[in-house]
Image (cartoon, rainbow, N blue to C red; front, side):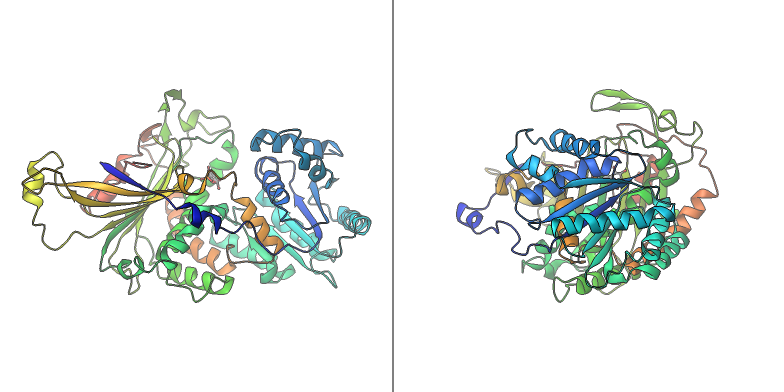
Length: 519
Ligand code: BG6
């Protein structure tokens, strides 16, 4: 298929903002569970990017909190993480200054007697560095500690400082079903007001995900055709080549539906389907997202299928099946793949199926949204085209590549040159982020952390949104839990998933788009 590449011109680039104008107020950022991978691989590199771009306050402190007595070794470990996972040079002039702001406090999350000492230590640091009363608590621990930490912060007067701001950032998974999410929400809101709570979904930190809103609402030409009148169906795929990467015990309890579909994919779905918000502000955007989720009727169990990978070849390497992964039950019934068909019962989308699929150990890594448009009412060139090498005329297709090869492509039919018979071949107009804007080193957490520091909740989930999503998926999870699938494993590592997922579309006369990635 032929492709035209799109780029922005140099003058447009010079207009790009060089960074946020607002700088957060001084304060202390406390990371609970700081000895885990997330802090070293994602949070610290992202904070360092903000520091490099002069987007952190002039005075700040980051305090890691975890059980092990790490002391000063913690800051050095974080320095190593920034070098290793972010490719920063050890001699970077800003690295030493950044690392000197990192401290550590050893604490047993569940032990209420440790919190007074933590509070005193945070106050001491704040006084020494003149940081004022603001405190941000980032919960990067295993989820079973969330409630206890929040309760202790409340009980020790750390959640609502008299003359400052405090906020809590909560990592996923936010609950494991509707009941647990409600329970957690009740606990959180007993201590923090909703406007202090930042439920993080790292997908919303991705540039391409944010660009969905810009694409739809900063351009006049797409919105008029963004509806059941022109769109046949939508496919959203989150395909990973990775397996469970040593996270067996976590994944055994999670599975693909909880791990990726209920949160990341629901966010993507909402941004594709929402009505134009009246402003890019937290309340407006979150209200419109919620309306989309509330318009999804219960998903019939027959429209949800699951899979688990067996051994196979991924990127030329032989890999073991899920049941042979480290610390995984050899008879596990956990799904590493989930696919479903859902609908959105509102005026814009009635009758348009949305197909979602997420899987580990798939043929290719690709997170992509494909909007398949309806064919013209009369295909006057089809007979000629079908007879030539291009085959049947293809419907228009808008592909939004979230990762990798971030970009947007539009497929349309073009006349094959020198064909006297008007043969039509599909071609692509392709916008590629990297060639237009250069390679980004951001990992997505920069934007989200900056928003937390600036007290902007637009890109964070509201309690109602989280509960609505769990309400949709809990019946499926319960139905799946009640019966271990006897056909597992049902797809080879390195394939496009189980046959039952193909049948889900075949019964509607459609097929999954497996030519994912840059054309
Ligand atoms: C995480 C899941 O939330 O998202 C992982 O727990 C998954 O299992 C990851 O691999 C995917 O994120 P990304 O940014 O690599 O697409």
